[in-house]
Image 1 (cartoon, rainbow, N blue to C red):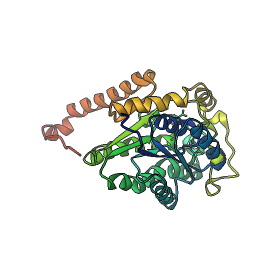
Image 2 (cartoon, protein in one colour; image 1 turned 60 degrees about the vertical axis):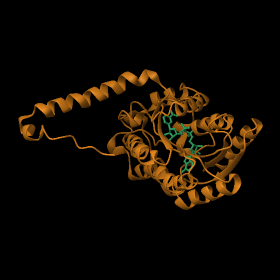
Image 3 (cartoon, helix red, strand yellow; image 1 turned 120 degrees about the vertical axis):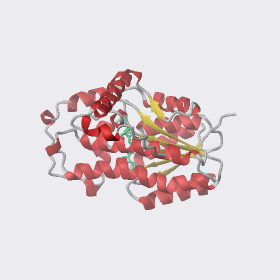
Image 4 (cartoon, rainbow, N blue to C red; image 1 turned 90 degrees about the horizontal axis):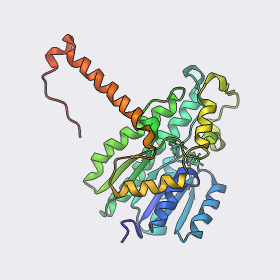
Length: 293
Ligand SMILES: NC(=O)c1ccc[n+]([C@@H]2O[C@H](COP(=O)([O-])OP(=O)(O)OC[C@H]3O[C@@H](n4cnc5c(N)ncnc54)[C@H](O)[C@@H]3O)[C@@H](O)[C@H]2O)c1
């Protein structure tokens, strides 16, 4: 019998894109799906698509940047399905790429509020619900390859995704004793509307005077094209099921990125080797390693 059958997943930003791909994949495993999203019209469409496949679904219009709206979604999930077993912290946005001085504070705050605080609030509200029944479960945080390798002209996005990978590593250890498995999903390009994230940008985060000059961020158009030629979100959903079955902490969807991550790991290791050889640090080199976790 499926590990997932009859259990309930709460998915933020699940009305389309990767969140919807995961909703569909988990729903086809027999899970009840609670979809939260800021886009009500898209929620209606996604609900119909899941119902048509025989998947039990409840939708909630919500903004991940508001802890009260998370609490309401958690209450609705319990009311409708009795228990929550899985949280997929998926909602995320990308501001227009640009150099440091062109990324204004409105952009930073929007990206941090949705991609970072949204994940924090989701975890603080939903994880206690998963802990409460003692049956264990799953927490999947949707990070990005940007959480593995810094992306030029996308400092804000990169900062949040590195943070999401870091939190996942913390929580992976912390929640193991509750039998809650934690994963960080790190895709490269997926064919979604992420490059049009501003469509759902909250009023308080908008900057009507913002003029984006694509030539200031040479990778802007290239990134859009890469997203449009990305892998399908349905495949990402299927890959998540496969990786959860294997209890993976890091979930990768693009093996082609392996070499770039190896290069980063090597650069870090080489820097350690130089620190080890530094006469300045000779006295502390023989101390035992600090361990965390
Ligand atoms: N598409 C890619 O290439 C790619 C690659 C790596 C990681 N990701 C990550 O995948 C996740 C999903 O992105 P996607 O590519 O499916 O994008 P998308 O724009 O297609 O979907 C994002 C969903 O989140 C919702 N959303 C946005 N702001 C919200 C808010 N404040 N509250 C609630 N819902 C909100 C949107 O309405 C939308 O339904 C994001 O975290 C993104 O950073 C995407």
